[in-house]
Image (cartoon, rainbow, N blue to C red; front, side, top):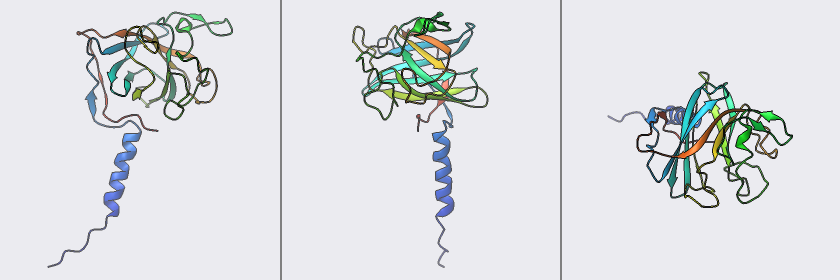
Length: 211
């Protein structure tokens, strides 16, 4: 007996829903990359009050450096995320001279002196320190996985980010405004340090950052 043909629409809708979930950073938890001495770096993110608020693991890959961020204690929504030139998370002056939280981290890492802030996935002339916005959920947790082809973890290299800092901002990066995307104050900061063999990491969803 011939079986009635199955309509493909439900299957297509289910697949679309799954892809949409991945695009929002939803998925089954999976261990973040285990830091490897000599080819990875670890960032311990702290808030202005010094309390720990997550971490990031940077790993050397063929395409550049993969950055995996796992942060918490943030307001829901998008937050600018950048690599800054100085490996310091103390208060310091902004370009106008006003002392701000994490101001000692300095400006965006821009080893090629492009002077151009832009979208990290669509603007080849952007700062090397530009990273996609961090999407934070209703529980205050944000995760991101992004490979930056403009940086390295090789000591002494002009575009090495070892000894620099990773900063999370209060607002979303608009990817247009110089020098920092109009992303507001600095709310989390951590120094990018060579990974140790005893480094401890958490977990993030398996899906990659999608825009």
